[in-house]
Length: 112
Length: 112
Image (cartoon, rainbow over all chains, first blue to last red; front, side, top):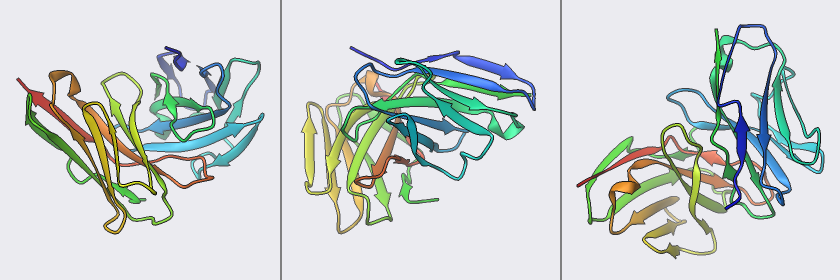
């Protein structure tokens, strides 16, 4: 069964550093998403991406964040200058035309 | 942001009995609802969904009920099995929008 994959599974970085989280969505899916879950809190929407552009973003997704689909398979989330409060699980998701979004296993980002 | 609420942080059920997980929402614009299951160190896995034009959807052991007037939905699992032990998230989406809005999750434990 096709699945969303994410790398790395765990990323440790120092405050102020840039990180890139990578995702390979399901191959025939058209819509791509990033969510995050801070420990003990809800899963929160960050951004959606369709047809090579951002289609919706949350208040969390400020100028420090960017997304890119550099080729036909990868989808990345970049945080330019990480803060302590960026520490969270980051989930990538994708879907075709339905509402059911399929999630990857997540990347645990630890900012020290 | 409390648009989707799961008021029970945990639930313990005996194997073979029925598990009932509840979810309330406040935004009447939501018109599609989903349940996700999450194991530790994994991403949310789509389980079952329901459109606001229906009041029930069934898939094997899983049934979701929607009461629009009460802004309430529930997930029934029968019979419950040990492998059902996980955190269950309720999520909602507005047609045409991109983001899923999640509840806080309910940890379900199935006791042998």
